[in-house]
Image (cartoon, rainbow, N blue to C red):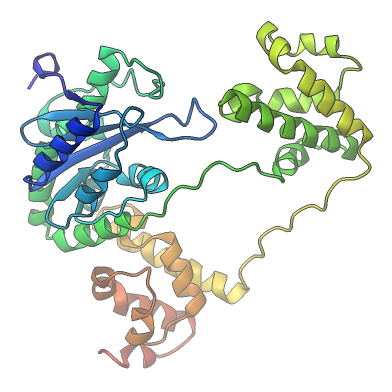
Length: 390
């Protein structure tokens, strides 16, 4: 269906309209969702738009106008299949803002990756199966701005409008390839994506920025205060820190700090000078008067050599297995699972079954191979790998 003939999405911005929509969604066997957030424009990111599509109609919910907490009943309903494309980001944001619980998910991006597709972006998949080329021009819009333009709303609508059709096409491919069970396990893993954490100031940021640029101790002291000042300014003006002042500018000020406020003019725009110069000059003076730097944080300790060697063997097995399957390596096994296997070094299937990051499908598909890889590394004859099949 051509984009120009789409019926505009119904706007949901009152409690009654949301309740009516939820009652309707409860009658559906599947519902497509997407979200838009304002991470590029606000200090604390939040969900600013929720797009919803059934097989019959599209809806756009405005979380800035209505509390969408009741929508959690749909997300948790095991009888309703929730469709997303690349659900991890949407889920982590919705969990953070609303505490939603998810089950019965179908992720079209995950499905495409399990099928071994080289291109699995939404635009590529829609072009492949539906023959529509999506316009991504509004991808970086400020979704926290009101009112949103008609073009922005149409762009948002397109992110869910075709998902039911795309889901049907990908499910057929999964069935043809015998990958339904594997995909379901992957979908269930996505449901367990943890909630995003609110932005917090990083007390060690000045080390990460200044040390690679070879700043001296006094320069690091000034940089520390400048970064702290930027954090407070970002909170005050509700902007991401990088949209207040970028790192390169702060490093330059730390290296060549002006002696008075007017010296900042050569580094700042007129607006930046008007809004930020007093705070920056105060930060520079605090850095110049500081006595010492705080202790540098310890780096994470490297794994012991044996664990690292086990991981390398497992990683080589994963790469070879993925090549044979024609998929990316993390479809076979996520990195976190490889590390847990390397650390715990299971010798039997019962041992391996205790590792939570390996789901039942992966356990049945790859369990014996994993034990063989570990046994070969240990110089075993494979005897342990054949123990305890239960």
